[in-house]
Length: 63
Image (tube, rainbow, N blue to C red; front, side):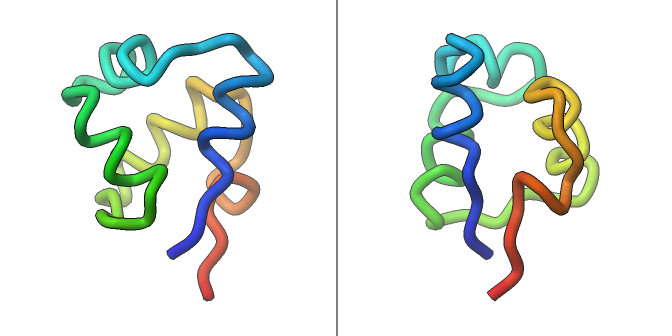
């Protein structure tokens, strides 16, 4: 599953560490998701979208 987390995160000036803390995960998890090495749980996907002020279907693209 592709995503635009990095683009949205940079627009908002949020670091991977800050996003991870808000979502209750470690920074490496955010890095793995951004680099398409890990698909988040549905709950984590919603948390990420909320922190990025976006909808889940805007952040994640099913390919």
